[in-house]
Image 1 (cartoon, rainbow, N blue to C red):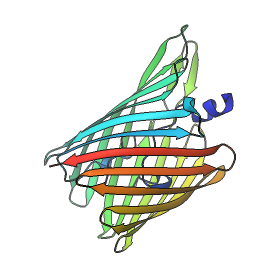
Image 2: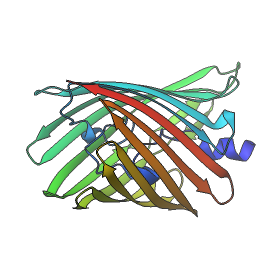
Image 3: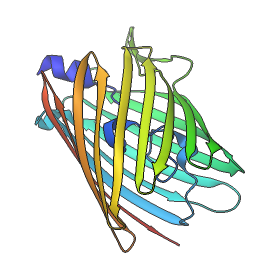
Amino acid sequence: MCYCIRAQANALPSSFAIADASTARTDRWYAFQNPASLVQTAKWQVAAQYENRYLTAELSTALVQAAYCNSYVNVGMGVSFFGFAEYHELMATVTLARRFGLFSLGLVADVISVYTGPTLGYCTTAVPQIGFTIDATPNLTIGIQTFNPFIQKLKTGSNKRALPAVYAVATDWRFYKGLRWDFQAEYDASSTFRIATGLEWQAIEQLCLKAGVYYKQYLVPCLGIGVNLSGFCFDVNAALHPVLGVTLAGRIAYSWR
């Protein structure tokens, strides 16, 4: 248990692009992922998600988010909770994004607050996040983002604790009607490299099937399904770590004009 908590502490909430390869995606916005993806045409959007790592309640992340899009600047907000009573992490984000023709830009202020026990209470800091996407062709989008680019640390009493400092580059290729291939490479200065790739098939307008894999010290296969009904989107993803076990995640979102 202690190993798992250390391994997952300060983990960013996942996206629901398969294998978490979302940096080049602009069809949906996921809080704490590439802020430049907040360029949808729906005026309002809200979402809630829950992710359970390795069938362990203490390693679960819950997130709620909301966004308002208009012709001037799109605004998104999100809050996430990871952990349990004796140790937990709270994250809050405010996102600003805008599309400029083929190019989109997003800027974020993220607040991270960690409760380590009654002695120190909550330790809090703020980190920036920036991202952009560019439509290289009508069917290919390139995305780049960074979370905590200046590698800030969290001060906990007399110690300083490493925070995620992620630099990611990705592509989203819609290579055939209803089919897309996502590829992402990222480096976290506080841990290691991660490579992810996945295929999504929009079988019918209401149903999307997803399969992918990522490598981060271990090869982890992933599967997912998405259902779209009258403005509602339901997603369920699963990943099987060869050592730690299964991660399950679910999301419900609603958007309207």
